[in-house]
Length: 138
Image (cartoon, rainbow, N blue to C red):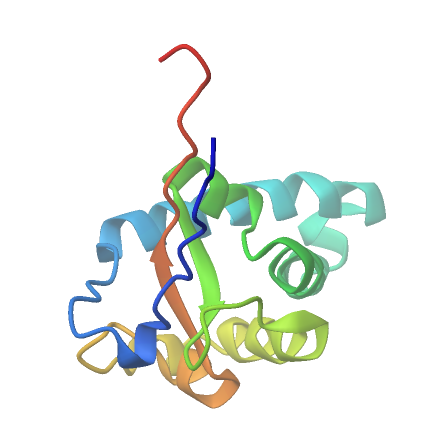
């Protein structure tokens, strides 16, 4: 049996690209933020160190987006962060920069027609659907 791998079309050149809803993006952010609050409690909590959850969020984004193209919240809401130009991962450096820009909040509110916030455009990223592979026997 021969299988033919199809190469995904990069979002920048895909005329049918439709970004996920803002609700799914916001849901992913809420899940990630709750995780960051829980993790930052190991450092004394937000009351003692108000920047701890923000720092954890930036590091979470750098690690998970850079290596896996999804944060835990994105996994749950079935979205992922890809490179706009080629559809691949954005890598650790761009993921770190994206996390810093996202922490500033305002860049995320300035979106284009593909729902790419300023933080996405500056890092060459886009949020896209993350289809799950079919399970064996399904």
